Length: 197
Length: 284
Image (cartoon, rainbow over all chains, first blue to last red; front, side):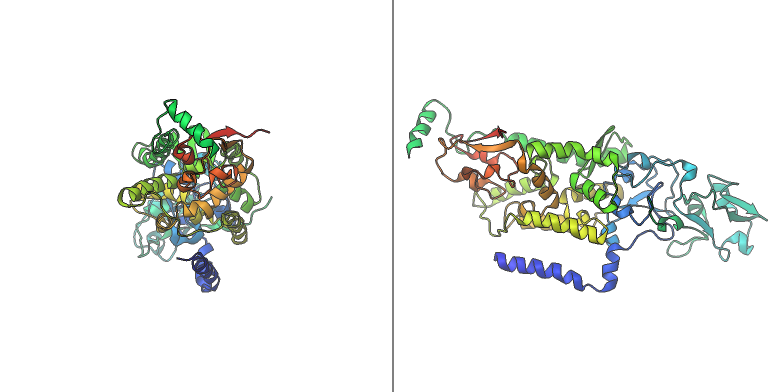
C-alpha cells in the first residue's frame, strides 16, 4: 500500500466519524448509569466520572463480591469504567474499592454516607403494596433496616435520608420482570448532580 | 577506509567477530518484557482466585502494597478533563515521569506488553519468513507521533471523555486479560490490538512509531533525556546494519540515537559488529 493511499484511507475513516448519525455519536458519550446500573460507592458525579476514571480496573479486581463489573466498547467511551448491576450482584458496602482508586473517582466515604442511588418501590408491582401477600423481603435484607426501609401498615417505605442505594433490596425482591426490573429499583438520582467547587 | 584497520586489530585482539555482535542487552530486555507481561498475566488470577490484592492493576495504574503508579498519559488526561488536581494520582505519576525524563521512552521498549507481543511476533516472522530483516513498506513521518498526541488530547478535551480508552494498547491488553479472567469474556475493543499486530506485517512497530499517544507523551518527556545511544565515529564502518535492526526506523550511525524518537531498546548496540554504539549519559 502506498503511503498516500493509506493516509487517505485513514483520513476518510476519521472524517466519516463526523457523519455518524446523531444517535451513534451520542451513544459514544452516553452515560451507562441508569436504573439499577450504578457507579460504585463514593463515585464523583457522572458529569466528570468518565473523565476522571483512568479505567485501571483496580476497583473491579478488589471487589470481593464481584459486584463491580467493567463496561466494554458497547458503552462507547465509558468502556473500562466500573458499574454495579444492582439486581444481579448488589453492593455490600465493604468499601474496599474506594481505598484503591488512584484518581479519586471513588472518594473515601463512610458506609452510611454512600449514595449510589435511591431505592424506589413500585406501588403497582410490589406484592405487599398490591396486597397479594405479606412480603417483607426488602425490609429483611436492608442493611439499614428501620432506617432506610420501614414498614408502614406492613408495606415497605423508603427513607431517602438513610437509603444508600446499595441494591440489596433490589437483588432480593421476588418480583422480576423480563429485562431485570424489580418491584423495588435503584434510581441513580445523585449521579446527575453538578460538580461545584 | 581508515578505520578498517582498527577493526582488524580489534578482531585480532581475540574478541570474537560473531555475526550479530555481542548480545548484551537483548536477552535482558526480552527477560524484562517477559517478566512484565507475566506479571499482568498472572496478577488477575491471583486477585480472582486467591483474593490476594497486594499487587494490583496493570500499566494504567499498578500498585504493589502502598506504592502506586499511574500511567502519565492516563493521569494527565484525568487531570486535564476534570480540570482539577488530585494529589495521589500526581504522586503516582511521579516515578514514571522521572524515568521518562532521565531514561527516555524505556517503558515502551522494556516493559510494554504490546512490545512483548510484537517481539514474539517478530521472532515467529523471522522463523517462518525467508528475509532476516523486514522491509518497511508503510512509512509515515515520525512527526505524526506529536500530532497524534495533540489530537488525542484535544479531542478528549472536546468530548469530555478520554480517548486513551481505545488508543492506548498497553492498557487495553491488561483490560483484556482481566476481563478474560474475571468475566470469562473478551472486550470487543481487543480488535484494536489485532489491528496493531496486523500492521506489524507492513512495518515494524508501525503503531508504536507514530500512533501511540502514550509513547508520544513519554517521547516528549524524554526529549532531553540523559541516557542516549552514542556513536563512536572512529569505529563505525557505515555498514548500515544498525538502521536495519532498529525497530523505530532510525539510523543510529548518523546519530539518530539522540533524537526524541529513540526508545533506548539497545537492539542497534547488539547488532553492531564493531562495538561502535554504546549507551552513554548526555553531558550537560
